[in-house]
Length: 207
Image (cartoon, rainbow, N blue to C red; front, side, top):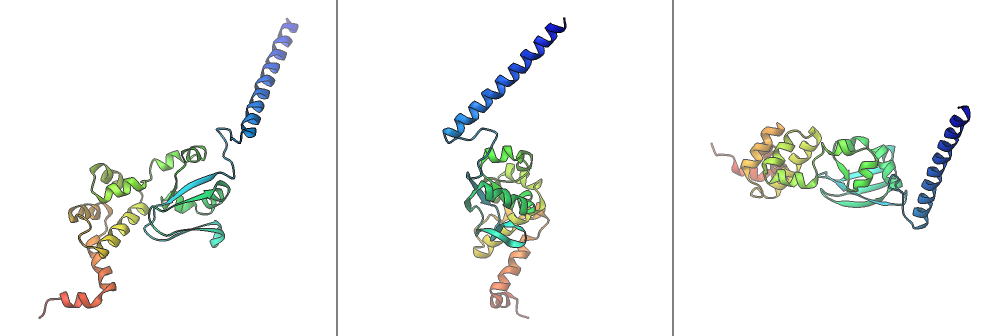
């Protein structure tokens, strides 16, 4: 009986070793072919990153703006970062990432980094653009979005209306104002006065 048990244990050990050797052979073949195992990301892999900020955004690899700095100048701008640099950027700029100021566009990196739950709560560029057109589904997502992303959308609207008052449907602007709790029309008027105070004085009724 003892011999049978020992034989079974030995067989199990041999089977485990065989599977381990097979795994190593597979990984070695992938490396020779210049490929990476499905559960790993090469440090030299380029990963696309998008800014969702309506203004300039600097992402550094070290705290206090030290190390490499990646500059994004406008909403929707995309840059390719080495994964080794991106790992440091994510560590240093955790707040900006978690609040949707920038996102990773590589599904594999998102999945292996454990960001799937986070990204389920963040509005994408396409969703934000749909909010600006008043799509009901997008407005519903905007309503449950984080404060930081709501503020970014409001900033985009203000910038557009200051540049061109007819660039958006004011009914949509009113809906977004009520959801966000920000008086966008007032903010636009204040911004216009800062850029052109003479015009504000001309529009005041004469007493």
